[in-house]
Length: 104
Image (tube, rainbow, N blue to C red; front, top):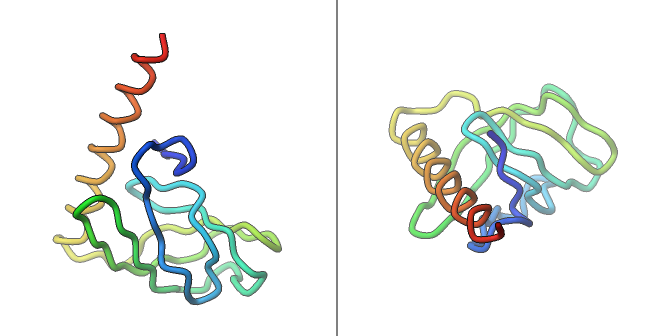
């Protein structure tokens, strides 16, 4: 499941580097980002994502790209990084589920 960073009360941050200007959403398998028209399908780019106490450094492979938006999947993850991504997604799922319940 993808989690929009705009809908999240706790910020999910991405380092602005390698052409990436911002994070749109995140999932266990990848991210969507805003970029400055530098990213092309097939590019492998290092990313740095922070959420709460988590500090995640990983590589992503660009799988779709327009002039300002790109979708990327995490690649070559070690077990520790994969576990951090899983944990972050579990937290986001819980937070987003609680937000939906409180809005009813």
